[in-house]
Image 1: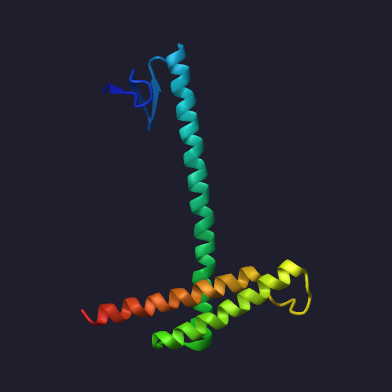
Image 2: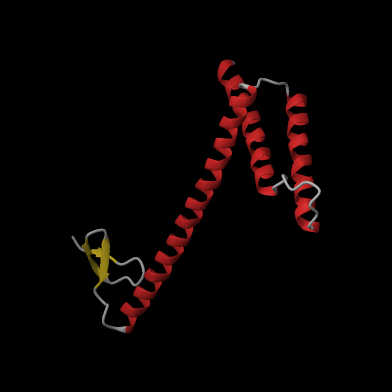
Length: 137
């Protein structure tokens, strides 16, 4: 089955999952290949970003599991959740300041770990809200 190249408008023939533009030997074909290369590079960059984000999301989920193991699943009202979240934000702020100004007052404070803990608490809040909404249906 012949389809039309979305880049140059020339007929193209399927070969596996890729297409080879019929105008490959001329200037139109070279431009088409350059556009395809650019699109593939952009797609690789997009997928790399997704993989990186999944790694960070995994760290947040692991922290959620650690928090549940330590504190058991939590069920709080919003003001209590906000207090817990702000305590974690305060630790993040302290870690960021130590990082910025190079103080060794609290070497145990790693701003990345603190940021993950903030995200994990926020995730826990949303999980509880989702459960409550499901129970109210």
